[in-house]
Length: 474
Image (cartoon, rainbow, N blue to C red):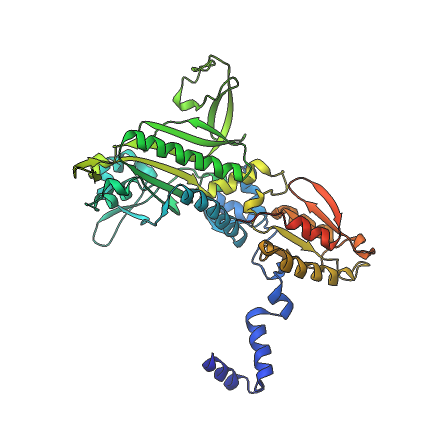
């Protein structure tokens, strides 16, 4: 810090007193004192009102913007396409994603999950060993380094984790079950990416790989992870179904998908109205109308896949010699499972199933920000309420610790309240607080919009604080 002060003195001879230096340092890093304390919209990088024709060329064709979540996320500036199927994730979206990761971390670690990180660049040799180098076809992003060694960008990591565990030659039965997971960027060479983050070429996924001593233990772990997935979706407030699924290129002997029913969904689901049976149509006769369990009537719906689980058995452990040592010091093949959650797909799917046609609605738990405060327009009759709104912001931060960093003050007071409320609707803050006409009453009352329920309340400062104290933030 001393060298920086000396440099300022050299460049700015007028700033010689400690008081001026402190004031200048504060403004350099934070702007005005109020902006340092309050999170104001004018200082956030959030491109609003993007013209649709400016992004269409990067998406492909105008008529491809038919997915609600894709359209809303682009219009609100939450994502911006860099090339077909690849996106910039803007700060609001990253905040939502980080909150979702916290929710998932809590559930994975509650069942004994340990977090690691594996390379995105996977050796072709590993994929050839498993037989999937040819099986995956053109979906794999393939490349070679300067030494002509072949690689792929990992869409999934069964080979990599199996190779890692196999390298630990002294793995004991006492260390099992082993539940290892990561949350990383994945790659898939989609022939025609569409629907924004619902089917992209680059995406974030949580993938967990488990190792057990026997089939019975592996199936218990399978049930445990599925229960944790249910907890994740329940905490987000989703209506979801767990359906029997096809094993596909990953393989194994048992598989389930977690689906959010939605008209835009690409999966066809058959659900029994009589019992708990549900399945992806890929796993049953597509013409079947009776439930194979209870003979009840099957009804068809569409869904967005947001999670997928596989019981792998020894499919990969036998190929890569993933052994553990028993109490008798005998090497035995580990039983494996793998479990995926689409992080960015969950974000888009939540917008798809919860939002209106022109306004984003987030699950409250993962909303980028919980509260937007809208002071009066400059020069309006209610302008005196601006100071009251500043005071409310400060009081909320002091009285409700979990809301610290979760409230945005829309300081664009040159705009009408209506215009700013429209932007707030578009971005999906769960709560919007407006200093409207009643802010001039005695006592002052603020107009509070609960965006997820549509309820509008008029509350005093104390009432607002009491309301927000009930908000849960991960």
